[in-house]
Image (cartoon, rainbow, N blue to C red; front, side):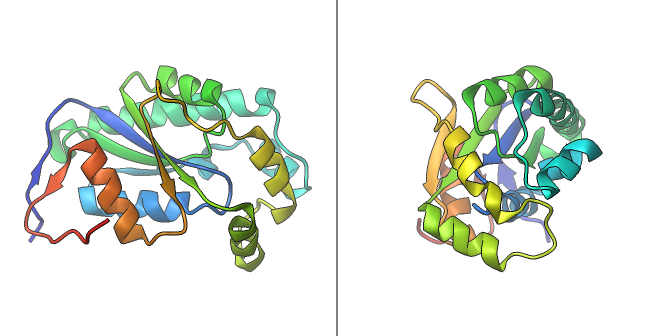
Amino acid sequence: MQAERQISGNARGIVVMGVSGSGKSTLAAYLAERLHCPLLEGDIFHAPASIAKMQSGHPLDDADRWPWLDRLGRALGEAALGAQADHDGLAVAACSALKRSYRERLTAASAVPLSFVLLDTMPAEIARRLATRSGHYMPASLLDSQLATLERPTADENALMLDAGRTPDALGSDVLTWLGITILGSAQPPG
């Protein structure tokens, strides 16, 4: 039996952000499952040339990122708007969204309000995760580039910063509380 949810508001998106290896995809999938809403994996919106560039150990530049952010933003907005009838207008995406300008671009392209959740932790922990991850095109050698690019959200952005070293249950509980979403019929572990 699907848990009842008390959600107010119109279509909106939740973007789980951070550097490669921070746990974006894991938390985004967790949230989408708990909220019974669409999930978009930002990696699949990269152009083949951008994927090849990263695979060869070269970081993307803004010219590579703008079309990717536009594609993902539009898809996120469409998913949230399309989900209004069945999923309370929510959609979740995993996307690095490293700079404020990238978050602004995503928001503009989506045409729905976005909430950002930054998963942040010590670089050594991220490097450890990347060293043990297989099957992903993003090499660990690009971590330093991503860390240098990262602009943590400021107080005027609709963003929550969390320690990526915590469990998906604890992180998810914090996100749902921050968003004011209550999932009835299921216990949420303390954050």
